[in-house]
Image 1 (cartoon, rainbow, N blue to C red):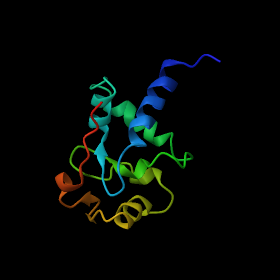
Image 2: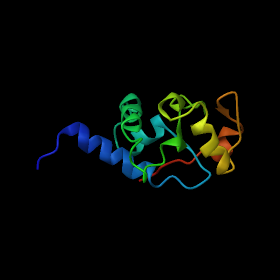
Image 3: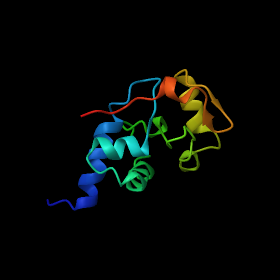
Image 4: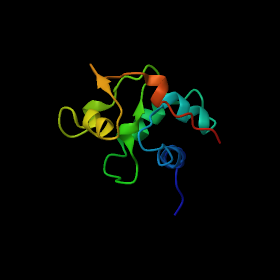
Length: 109
């Protein structure tokens, strides 16, 4: 079966997201840069939106460049993304990660 470019892009995104350590977060832009497509952070967001039925993709660990939980409305329930992060020890206040740089993981490949 031949896959289209979007499927291949999404799978490369998921490969990076699966490597985000427990208790850490990264950004859409950092993922885009890591897969060699630095101008595609919005597409990374689309990949995250499409990943919510994939238990092995910790989408809750992907936030915007300022540490905001911009993808939270794609999770079931009002605060599920925040609850998942807090269960890993990441502090969130007003939909923003406190001490963002402390929890930020830079994907380097």
